Figure (cartoon, rainbow, N blue to C red):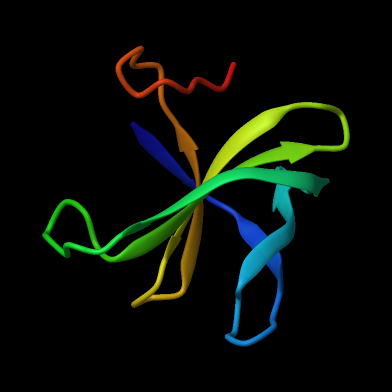
Length: 90
């Protein structure tokens, strides 16, 4: 799994950064049309800090996995080619 830092714009509702609405990668804006799944990594460890994960679909029908590390307020695009992970960006 590889983490690529990205800039994310979020909807803020009952909490700040509730969910992403778009992200920027290599100066290209990707508008999120749907969040198909989301989950929370609650057990902090040196390898896995507390984070929210969002599986998103863009307007061009591409799927991406986005990670938001809560403590440092850092956003990442998750690149995984492991079939066990069930997700791959090509």
